[in-house]
Image 1: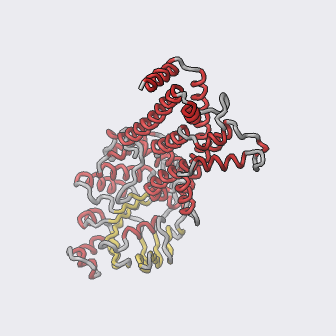
Image 2: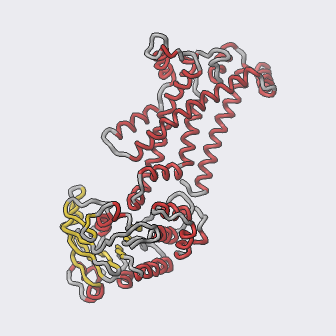
Image 3: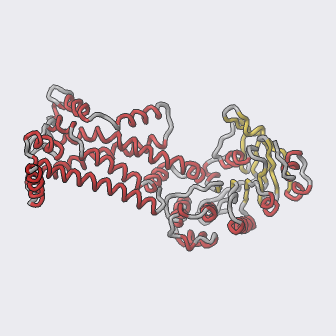
Length: 235
Length: 244
């Protein structure tokens, strides 16, 4: 038992002293996750809106594909990105392997389908609700889209937070394409894996606490947004 | 003629419906329907359930497209400009996830009416001004329907369609809506409404279009329709019998 109490004490010590290594890992984790989230939203939200509002051949097939891609195995995505970015791969000339940018690409591939599928669902429900009214009013498509985004803002924020939650807690893909290089590509999840394998439980626990705190904060934020939307009759 | 939006309104009346037919899932829902709806007063569309009343109204407003035949507004086929001069109040109104005032402002801005004071005036007219900042989806059924009517009226349409807009409402809400309809009708707005409420039809109608099995069974002035209906289906309907 002493090892547990010692590890916990050491972990709190690292957190209390704002250990430089710890803060560096934390900053990189948040930066990589936020960057991939922003890129995923830029790509995913318009695609989700397009799929929600337009009906065309293969549309249902595409929605099905994106739904299925929400469960992409991270290690497989990591492997595919690795193959594409490795020196002999088609994008090897970019020299991105084992950089934070490679980690952003891998995470972006993982969370973009989540953003597309969930935003499509949210906007499709609203489109079904508003369609006849907007059609009757002869509302231009761009105005309608803007109205959907405004009126679905709480639900869309929940979608975005779900994407962030997936990104920040992901380990399989980033360890393959990032390589877990100290002071360069080490993020919380990969550091936890490494420190645990080394038996350095204090650092692993400290990082684990932070990761848990972030996950809980994101979930509480989602719950608060949902409750707030319900209270204001925005759902 | 121009309204407060500054949009030039074309004369839209009369509405000439020429042999329209609409089939869905191999069921003929509108069957070779022809009529001329004149400009004055309120036209009421009546008929038993499944007669095609709502669908006919959706065709008139352009929300449904007939397979055959055509609908002319003052000899012009329905186009987006004509549709912009019409409003439709649905049986179950679509309420935007915003405040009551924001719901009205959204519609007003589609026609270039940016002044919130005008929206507030319409809310006052429909006795909703005290709820202006209230989330619209939390309104009662009657309040939602009054909001829908305010949204329909604020664009000052040449033609106002109402699809069973007062069904399931309490008498006070119905009276508020009917008073407003009579008021705008007197000012020259053409009103076409679908209703099952015979009492309401008697109070409001200038002429009645009675539909049965997707066909126009009768189109008569209200007085003669209620006193001496010509078709057997209308007679049975007014007598409260099941019309099959």
